[in-house]
Image (cartoon, rainbow, N blue to C red):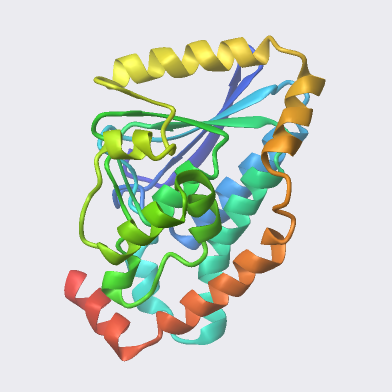
Length: 250
């Protein structure tokens, strides 16, 4: 699995969307765009009644933004365009007419926490610690904030954002409402995801659609808000502080 990809498969009316990059599933622009389109396609596919979002590999669910691409950003437009990739994925998940189950097998950092937060129901392993590290490199979790705060609350979001270099345990994430349940092994996680997805796929599709609408009511402004937040991050990534920080990691 050395090449980045986004794949979609369908089994028993469950659409599985899997993303992968060799850099611990850190997300460059092309993968973000492919993920956005895959989610939109799943929403339009009548053979899919429920979606499972997962990542390839055994260790990290998603390491957030691709540092390689962040370092290469040279102007505000490029910065806004990159962070809009995360905004567009979250908005696609929000607008998708199918319920989305998150399958988080390992650590989630930054944008990875945003993706988990934008699912409708998220299951994880005990290895799926979470961290919002953005402020430590001179930017901030501005694009993902509405999704994360909606799931774990303002207090927990503030704590994680300010204590930016700490990984919070999967149990913490469960206590705060990000994860519905936490399992000891990936095998147990996959069994639970399959059981839930199979059950949901057998339910009335019209009822599931109405539930999705209720779950995401009062979020229509995100279509504009998240792009505005992307511009903030796009500006900050150009700062000398952030440039030096990113280079120190490369």
